[in-house]
Image (tube, rainbow, N blue to C red):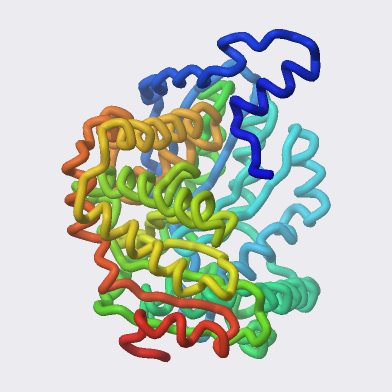
Length: 463
């Protein structure tokens, strides 16, 4: 028996309950209202003599403040034999300062209603926390102590390295990790962005001295930006920040390491004997966020694979039943970005799934979307943006993105309007200009004995 449509389901439920179905029950749901426009909240920016930047944004009515110290270092500053050294440093960072043990740091933060977390990414590391608004100034002092005076005690090294080794062991059982590990260096050859995971022996060889040296070379005021967003006293917070960070050495300017480009299709098969699914990564490099096409390219991605009702999702999941949750993203780094399609598909339809992806890309390159389809993608992007900026952590994310990419406040203020300014012709142009399947790298982790023949049409080279 075929599944019931939503209208038929509503009718059956109504009859079972002994009530007459109303037009609202069996009709189509009302169209959602368009997202509200975004107005950048008033903010106060300060640059200290040592180059450190401060941003204060009184925002909202809930008596909480989110504080984030973002430092522009991470994998971007790792050499080929230092993969994950910045992550290890992040693990190490909370193990104490010259005046507080790890337990004392945690207890003091808890007394303010929050906790300190460390986040290590390719281009930036951050010390973050959300605390009671009245404690914002005190939390800034705590972050200042931790940022400048971590001790990296030798006694913790073995435990922290062991935790990371176990993480690698778990990750390497996952086909998604295996596919990404081969895909990243195709996008970013001989570059830190292309090194996703270290060898276990290399990780086990990292020393406390190496962590301290990486910290000394890459963490300093010139790379730091403190954001405070929420309901707090801005004057007290600024005084606390000036007191906490005024004597911090500037250190080096942020690293600029623009990746080289790659061209031409590449196919890599990661053999997983007897696998019942194939994990696909497919994509290519696209322009950085400063490029004039950035917003139109993101609208194009939303229509193609970046939202639940997108073309690739609808075709692969709903029509074909090949994949449960395919999706695509435009993932930015500093000075570059990449478009990638992700999909886990049943082994026997690996080749057909790639054909669906390519066909949907080519269809968008051949014909522009309808006005209604475009409006759906625009509403999704604009709505997501407005929702993100409605909470302090999300607003900090957007502020730091604009700052680190040198986009400026106008980018944030005009984002929604610029999304809605994209035309169907713009979308087609973006697909034609940047999303050429013949130039895409393809990585498939699956049972080679069953998928190699299926992938033959996509095989210019095999590595």
